[in-house]
Image (cartoon, rainbow, N blue to C red; front, side, top):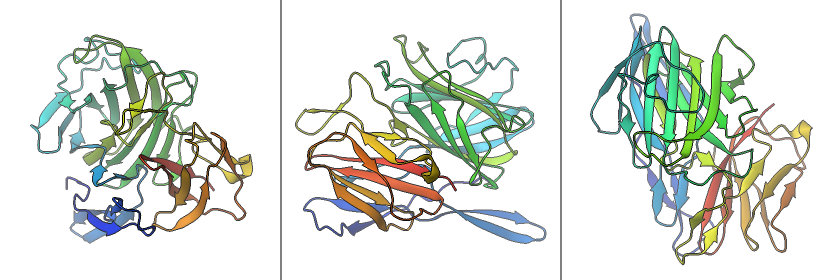
Length: 323
């Protein structure tokens, strides 16, 4: 069975009744596996949150397909199906080279090309992200991938950091496997040119051992899946430059200390929302661009969304809380 995420959404009013705003909720993600013994299903929480902004839903790019043996077939949305065969030349260095991707056709997104190979159980992904053309100035920048493999039996959350000295953080079925070299082969971010864009830009690359079968991958295009502080940033509707909010540490463990948000717009409202849509923390930023949060009670392990709201913009960041 080829696994594909739900595509329907519903629109509900914001509880704060702020004029012009709405919250768009994603249906629960479930996978099903059919066999001679019956049907098994599993429900998942998301690593990548939906990014509801004024009247619009920005969803990460979704690639679906199947992999097995030494080949992979995949497509983006309703685009053409691409078939790539393993050429055994893949090197995780964060740089595109023609030799390592010889014979591999990417799927083309609005702001990125995504290359993939599957070689006897090893999945190799390169996100050629041409949207990021300003060199990051903060080592905590990362690209977040959400991936389902093995007909949905494996659910991955993969953080590939811009800092070359940092290993990627990898979670499989809610359990961190970062240090398990039998699962996580390697991962690295890089900076360089490619056939899509000769000028230097960001690239995110990783290799993992994954089950054969149907798969689904979500990644930044342009995202809510990439979070970075860069010398140039996005702008609001009036043209003012907005510095992306930085959330540290990520993922977060309460025993390690407080949660810190930096580059906050003064006057912003900060909400932390659990997977059921409940607001578990809320505050306003009055005089400082930095907010330190020490929670009065223990947070349940899982995924949360940090929402930063101003009069003109809304930013959302995923927060992974570890046990």
